[in-house]
Length: 222
Image (cartoon, rainbow, N blue to C red; front, side, top):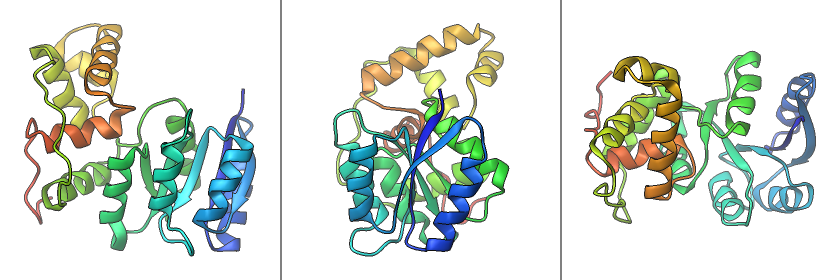
């Protein structure tokens, strides 16, 4: 089945470009477009996309506020945020709210297509090193408004797996690091999500840093 995608961006040319690019992929169907945050709420709730490609800065209602509202719905779509380096801190807030990842607006076409499929598959877009650096940076600097969940329910092995997830390691890489089967890693990840009430790896990364299980890099670190 095709991945159903809705696009939210206040620039018509940008929306058209994304729609043409993604629509050319045989595994993606564009089901709606919106020019602002309020419009994407209506479009997404009417068309029920699997993934919403969401710009951060939009009129009337910004992308983060729109993402929060959509993610509070029953059976919400996956949210893939679009951003530029000068507004990274807002993207961290979106990931805390439950967005499955973010992509820089200057990403290559193949990266955009791959990102949609990754997010639709239930994973988070955390592999690029720049993504890890940004999350680490803003976890250390952001104002924590709610206490992170306790990690006491996790076993020692689950903590090891969570640390590696926070480092951006794939299930296959974690299996290699810990010398265990990839299916065993998948089981550990599933149990971590269940015990901590997480939706995906993006939230797992944030929890790993907010809880202190992984030390965030100091500001300015590479």
